[in-house]
Image (cartoon, rainbow, N blue to C red):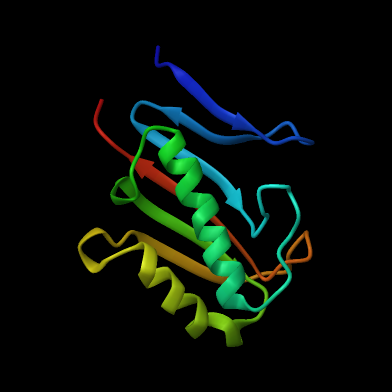
Length: 124
């Protein structure tokens, strides 16, 4: 039987920030919330950067590195923001360690422009 480790919790919901099992790390969708839990108002560039910084924080606090990220799921509310998002995404992932990615348009549950989840893997 494999061990399952939960990393961090949501302050108001029964959700872990990430769950690790057999070398796989599943990161919950991150949004542009600051350290006080407030959503960042602003353009896609600012929201994408904060969302990706939040993703980096969860990944690294769980003992992984961004180069371990193998898949990213991205939801954006306005497809016209796709190019701005891609510019910011390239700041966090280089070509050598680029994950597989899906990007779709979606209605956000909270008042933001973007949500990103991820799956990472590293050998034990």
